[in-house]
Length: 59
Image 1 (cartoon, helix red, strand yellow):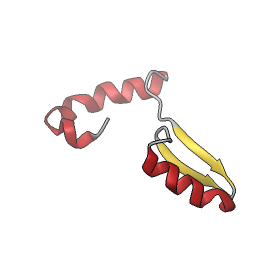
Image 2: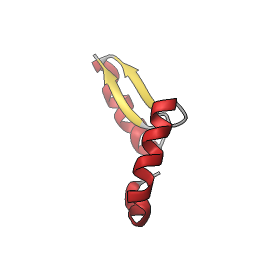
Image 3: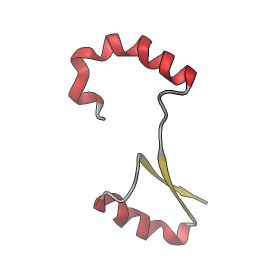
């Protein structure tokens, strides 16, 4: 979900979204790749859409 697609409803989302974050209903997911040596592979996977949420490199 991209916020830019829903700027017209963002103000009403803030209180509801805060409630969902607090009770665990809304979660942020990430793809974590371990090791700097795997960074090139992760970078390519990012553009392939192989990640869920943010693509992170754990050092």
